[in-house]
Length: 262
Image 1 (cartoon, rainbow, N blue to C red):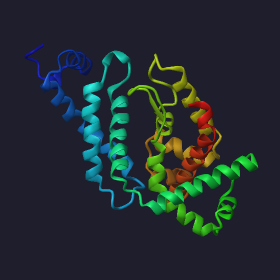
Image 2 (image 1 turned 45 degrees about the horizontal axis):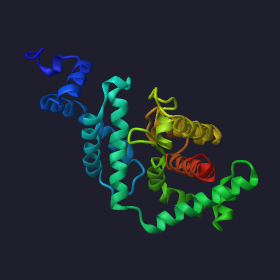
Image 3 (image 1 turned 120 degrees about the horizontal axis):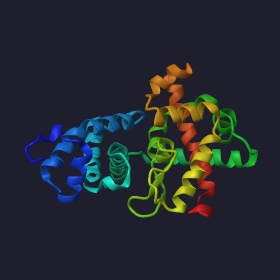
Image 4 (image 1 turned 180 degrees about the vertical axis):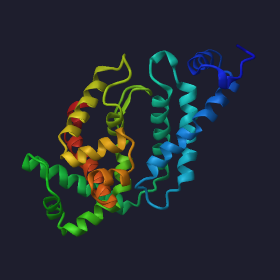
């Protein structure tokens, strides 16, 4: 096999060989092959981010995730490398965004206020709160509330990838992971991980229909916010507002029960 160019060999064979001997040529081959995946993930993360977050920076952060994925991927686990790598790349990007603390304090505070308001209201009402009710509890008019939702949209995407369960390094669950892969891919996953994933999926299913559709179309079907707007026949900015509200609603539900589960 030594004389056959790497490009002509089966990928599963290359992974087995790399896992055994850490051949740098095979590593370089994988880096080149999967570089477009980094740009793809960075492009999805970039949607809804403020203008001061540069796409090229996101690609740079994601490249570290790809290297990490290549070095830690175990072909015996029965998971496709692409699936594993997307999680690692996205995680590396969000880790770096957190470390540079790019979210203004005022926006972070407003995000918490809206999330708390949604959580309190829905606990009292026993149902989904409307825009008018949430705006009223925050002392805002509906227009001001919708503008606020647009302002905090970038932070909501980041918060969706907060880890809600952490066992060892390979056993972490975020809300985003649960939307993208509702069924666990790891056969020896521990019970607590399955439980928190089940709870997340259960609360996703309880969201208003349009918000649930947006999450599934964005994270599972890989549509952009603009494409989702065309599917649902609403504007892109409205999709962004609904997307943000869905995430804050989810986070508020999970925050209310988190201590009892983790």
